[in-house]
Amino acid sequence: MQFNDQTIFVIGATSGIGQATAHAFADAGANVTLTGTNAKVAATAASKLPRPGKGLRLDLADPAGIATLAQGLPQLDAVVITAGVTHFAPTAFDTPEAFAHTLQVNLTGTFFAIRALAPKVRDGGAIVLTTTVLAKDYFFGATALSASRAGLTVALRTFAVELAPRAVRVNAVSVGPIETAAWDKVGATEADRQGVRARVPLGRLGRADEVAEAILFLASGRASYITGHALAVDGGWSAA
Ligand SMILES: NC(=O)c1ccc[n+]([C@@H]2O[C@H](COP(=O)([O-])OP(=O)(O)OC[C@H]3O[C@@H](n4cnc5c(N)ncnc54)[C@H](OP(=O)(O)O)[C@@H]3O)[C@@H](O)[C@H]2O)c1
Image (tube, rainbow, N blue to C red; front, side, top):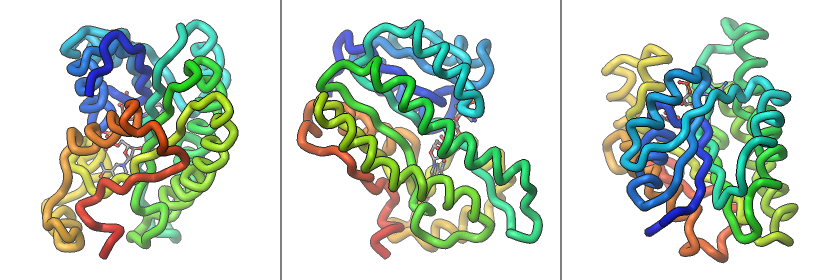
């Protein structure tokens, strides 16, 4: 897949899946602008791309900031939103702050980012989101995470239908367990990883670059008749 000189905007690309996605787009010839919640970290990540891009600060918890940032952007061929909060807490121990923040970033902020950026996407362009297999499946402590991503997965259909008259396709990758920094951020141990591996039919955690492949496909002309779809990249998790 080639994206020669296409302009791609990746939200949440300072680590993990977003970082691998930004690299894959740059490798494929795209001009990439990526974001993180810290301007310096984002600029550094952008400077390390195979074709150095631009790094900007964007916080999905700040819809007004997103709207302001969007105004200054050029026309885009694709927007990818891989940013997200991974939060696990058993119901009895969750806090209103952590619960609200998870919904704010993973659902509300993502919604307002799409609202602000959709007008910047050229007719015939694409938007690709990340959701999780936990939007449908039980996992210990995943109440806020599952609720936020279930909401986004349903909203995906609305985005797709509303933008279809402009031939802007909106899809998602439904992500299974992928070894990224997110696991360390939530304090996952080797025993936790072993337990998850045992639940994956392919018997291993996925890699960020395997998710990036699917994101590039959905953003490309090869997916020209696919919209409103969440593609599972989960080692068979959702099939089992
Ligand atoms: N890894 C998995 O097993 C897995 C499984 C299912 C779904 N997912 C989903 O896949 C996506 C990427 O996950 P990952 O594993 O690559 O996570 P990650 O390595 O933790 O990366 C998360 C990215 O999101 C950005 N981010 C965090 N809070 C943000 C906010 N408030 N506003 C804007 N950006 C924010 C981070 O930027 P900064 O670091 O600059 O703050 C970072 O670039 C997430 O949506 C996650 O829910 C991952």
